[in-house]
Image (cartoon, rainbow, N blue to C red; front, side):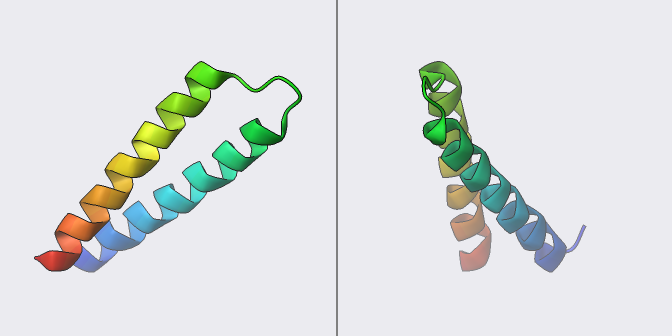
Length: 55
C-alpha cells in the first residue's frame, strides 16, 4: 500500500469515526463507553495521519 493510499484510508476512517461519534452523541442516552472508545480510535487515527504526513 502506498503512502498516499494509506493516508487516504486513514482520513476516510477518521471521517467515519467523526460521523459515528456525532450520531452517538445525538442519542437521548449515548453509550459513554462506546463514545470513549470511538474518540480514542479517532485520536489514534489522527496521530497516525500526522506521523505519516511528516515522513
